Length: 112
Image (cartoon, rainbow, N blue to C red; front, side, top):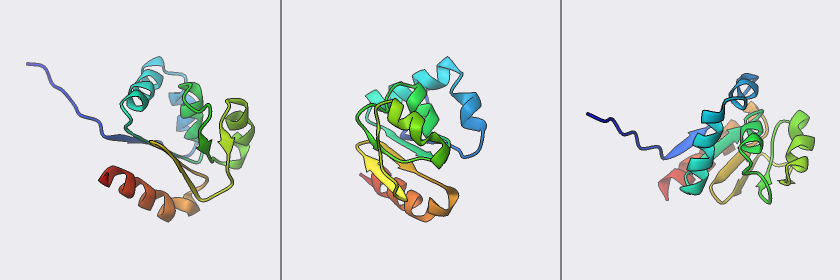
């Protein structure tokens, strides 16, 4: 019997775990599939690095932890220094202090 899991969104973690996850082809393909399906992709702190590595940042308005700003810009994203940035199905935030705004944006997106 096959087991099917329905994914409605992905929320990335903070810290250094995104640096490990971005090296995994299956994780990057999962994000590409989520993006193709217009599912919510929420990335805070260092998690936008996964969006960059998945190749889905180009042309998107996004924010991130300050040390990733150049990576985001070099990937073709439009950097915004704001607590939360929503561009289509991608929600991004800078730091854990931004979590209240980040969580509200995720809830609003998932409620659609």
